[in-house]
Image (cartoon, rainbow, N blue to C red):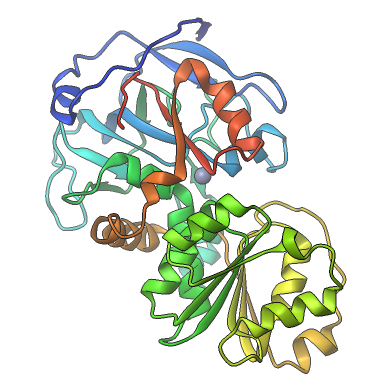
Length: 402
Ligand SMILES: [Zn+2]
Ligand SMILES: [Zn+2]
């Protein structure tokens, strides 16, 4: 089904129009394959798949490498059907559509070959399980399928973005790029953008709120921007890496707090320092945990004012437990705690619209440390795993989009 190839490519510069025009379909497609946890990722060659009726083929412009891919590579995400072609958030040009009927966007405008599009990485939700149809928690659908995560490539289908072409299953939710939005900004926001929008919805940020964001990785950075856009008067970014905090300022943080600078002081003094940074001095109206450590959940409860809200977003994989005194930290403080898992089409649609309007104000583009070629995928993974860059992008067709 697939055979391994080793090819080094050099990036070439093309305009989008040139990229769109050059879509004569090749007979084979190169894609990066993750065979299992901790195994090196290899480049494999697949036959160009035949599209099912209703299927769409994209020529990939960019795909992201994010923390989720690292979790998958470390075997920390349950039920991943290795081997897979990773890459969940991606964008591309429509290279082929197989349908006798038009395939329309949500405004009833037909998609056509040459359109630059992004798609919701959740390829399938059933709309008929208990979670989809009764309690309306679509992100918890029991039949949820996600590109680059829950599809094996054993059947030869190209269902991940680290591939020259991506095969979209019938029913995939696509959006044409709004005017002005560029693929680099889009991939800079990446999956974190949708999660961040969902998170800020869950946080119910009000005009004038003081918001603290614990952890400013890819999700946290977009949470800072969306909290600001929601009318937060003050947004404090908390992290232990100064470059991330500096970037959070560009994403709209009014204040920053570097945990590393305060590691030598008593915890109670640190809490006082942070709570003093809220306007009232009582603590923050809203604390949003995007750090991915159990301790950050504990700290979020400490930094929230009585009657405030805490949203927990960073615990995407099981990173362990933390002891919490429910009387002191929840009951007596009268705190609302909300979890946030994944995102659905509404978040994707709104996030991309917001990004198209604000991408010059909030530099999502600069979240990408570097664009890598397919042959450099292991280096890209290493850079993200070692946190030497917030996010990396993959250009599987060897094009330099910067
Ligand atoms: Zn369902
Ligand atoms: Zn991601």
